[in-house]
Image (cartoon, rainbow, N blue to C red; front, side, top):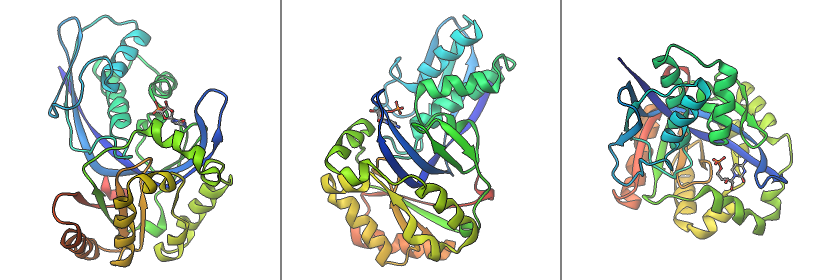
Length: 295
Ligand code: C5P
């Protein structure tokens, strides 16, 4: 028997870092939105060990991989010694601020729980997810959510009125960014390191009651300062997208992906054509619908 699961990615529509914590992490408030762009994970009970294979040869498949760590944590928590073979079909760019690895870990927990007859409760899964990484708990559910704490406290939200019928153009420069580096770099950007609490909640209310254009000035990401300083091409992408018809544009997570929102598929297509004409075909691009029907 095997279980297969899609592993969607996310963007952060707002990411407000609030300050460092004694445990080395940072408190933050972020509005995370799931996207239809997904990896695919297949899990099977076989053998005696945990084995992972992947379509991307540059992704380690040893115990440094979050999927392997999730499977080991699942076996320990459920008191199982059965072997597990997993195969990951990778579509989401890596180290892109799209939560690909975190989503894969959550997909592994959910798939394995199904494969073994649901031995773990939702609470146990949430605890394991938070131990695996700050972004992993978000991916145990599939709606937009406000995340607080170090990102592991999740409040699921309804789909936003301002994004009804909207389309997203995602662009990626072909290089990744280390999240740990991005957090360290905030030390040189004191205002971004100590964001004003309440910004993400106000942005949620704005997306619930206003149009995309009215909410567009409130898209915010604390990491744009340090990341754009080191990688000015990403600032150019964002500026170009804004000037070329996007209703909003922002870097996602700690980068390197940048997203643009438009109010129609045609507008997203026209924006992609302009982007490719300006930056050539080496950046990766993807067009996606946004909203309840996207997953
Ligand atoms: O939780 P996760 O393992 O994904 O975090 C990766 C790194 O990002 C951490 O080791 C830490 O340096 C940084 N981080 C942080 N504050 C957060 C989330 C992550 O400082 N809220």
